[in-house]
Length: 395
Image 1 (tube, helix red, strand yellow):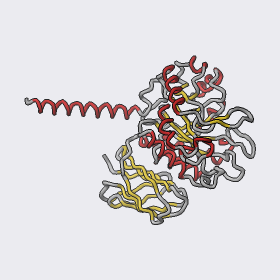
Image 2 (cartoon, helix red, strand yellow):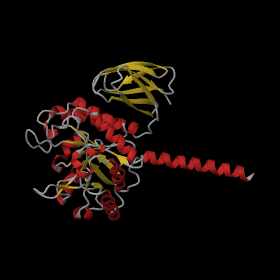
Image 3 (cartoon, rainbow, N blue to C red):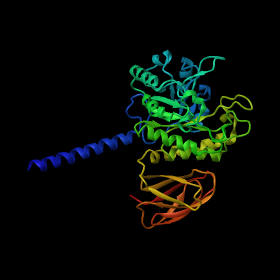
């Protein structure tokens, strides 16, 4: 055998080995690198709730929420005992109590303080100083990781991720260049912006800011970090505006289509009065969120499979209404997740790339079927509509 042929055989063997390793990593999910992190696996899609009482864990589990994020002035021993009894894992601060529970599987991650990219309070009546510097976040990340490398570290950022003009950043308003530095200080990065209830005319009602923020985080991390984001589902601090179930569903799927691999529901409300767990008091929204979460859980193996790059093209009849898509192939089916990212109406022509012949297109959860020819079909989109399509094509 010539030397060059031996090298070819060795290279082929290495490529097969690399492919096997990648397939094994994919089967274990995004969290396989942490021995005490979220449970992982292709059937796991993290759906969290922000800063809630452990006593409500059972009702959140029933709604399809599988993770607590943050604990008020905790974790405490009582917090962890309640969550363990309920079977609800948590990502929390790495305080003294947390460090005493390094072997406790209830804790699946650590987190920084919330929104360090915003201007920081100087104390009651003393105004605000600058945001916490990115290099401080990176240094804190290294300390957290040194104390426990077996769990991921989460960083939640503010609305400056999606809105450069967010004045809540103080002296760092209109400085998006900070964010590629912030994301170096975590393993999981998330952010929050709440367009439905927002007080600024620039943001209010423009749900697409959620997708834009996710897209920017994916770009700033160069795909090397896990990206999650927050979803509004209450009035928060608005007297007049509250998201509808339709809008919440749109924000959820808009996030996923643009690259989010985890959701965090913000369920607090300050108006008309303070309610820490307002979602639990709103039957209509609770039921809607439950349906959304259970659908995501059922599709988790699909959502965790590789995305088909440029897998579909969309041509809306109304150019003012863009439709974003994500394409997956799993279990002998092609899935197209499509969401209108503007508020108008349109009919859209969707084309699944590489699909030839005639196929039925199931519109998931809508009790209807469309027909495609060579991957092409049409559908109508009302304001902020989401359509989930499945095409059974065989192996």
